[in-house]
Image: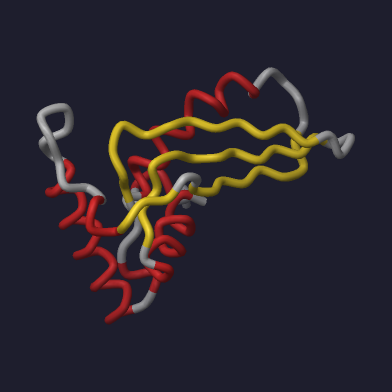
Length: 121
């Protein structure tokens, strides 16, 4: 889901400065949780890391029928993934993601995948 969100951010040109989780239980009760990011991003792995703590707090055995992630608030794309003293490797991760996107554009979506997305045979 974080990769899909990253694609949507790329298409529409903003960057995320926070994430919003929407969870709907089996009984149709909706829960919304938000988290702020230390700096604007368009990288799926950064979105994933930010979404884990709020999701972990809600993972108490409740059955969910819907889980979604969104970006809110938004910032200009130029501010995204520039790196700073707290995260000097952000530009390198951004370059890696752009290279993967270029390969997918040229050879198809299945050309590059993340290890956690792989299914055992």
